[in-house]
Image (cartoon, rainbow, N blue to C red; front, side, top):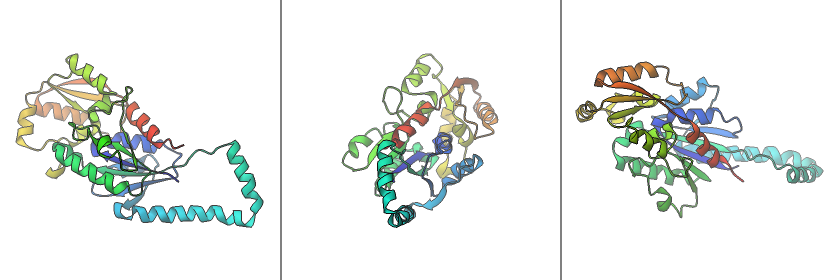
Length: 284
C-alpha cells in the first residue's frame, strides 16, 4: 500500500491534528517518536485517534512487517480457494476499491524558524531520510522566509514526489500565518488594508508558545525579540475554528498585555491544510 509521509512545522500542530483525526480511511497512521511528538499525540488521542509511535530509524522495519502480514492475510485464503481470485479480480475491475494509505507524520521543532538556515537544513535532511520509504512527502511548511522556496527544484530528481501547502491559486503559502488566514492573497490584503502594519499574528499555537522553555525551542526568547515587539501596535487573534489549545483567549490577552498591544480578531481558515492533505493523499 502507498506511503505518504508528512514533515510538519510544530507551529502547524493544530492543523495537522485536524486533518489526521478526521481521516477515517487510513490503512495506518504512524507518528515519528521524537522530542516534539507529545503535543500532537495528546491531541490526536483526545479525538479518539491512536497512532503507532515509532522512532524514525525503525519506520522501514515496521512498514515491511505490516505489509508482509497484510500480504499473508490475502494470499492464504486465495491459495485455498483458487476460484475466489478470479471473482475478486472481476469485481475489482467493476468496482475499483479506494486506495488505503499509510501516513507517517514527523513533526519538527517549533523554534527552528527563528533561523532560516536551520529550517532549510533540517527539512532537507528529513526529506532525504523519509524519501527512502515514502511514495510521496507532504511538506507541512510554508516557504518560511524563502528558506524552502527551492524545494521542488532541489529535489526534482528525488524519485519521491513532494507536495506542499498550496493556496487556491496554486502557490505555496509563505508561512503558517498565511496558511491560517487562507492563502497568500488574503495575507497580502490583510497587510494592505492596514490590519498588518505593526501587527503580530497569533494562531493558537503561536499564542501558547511565545515564551516557551527550553530556549532552544522558544518562539520569542531573546531580549532583542521582546524590544522589537514593543514597536508593534496590535496583536491579531486568528480564529481558525480549531480549539485544541484551550487557553487561546487567555494566551492572547497575556501576550497583548505583556507587549502593550491592542487585540484585533481575524477570521481564519482550515481549507489550505485540508485540501493540501487530500491532494497529497489521492493516489491513483
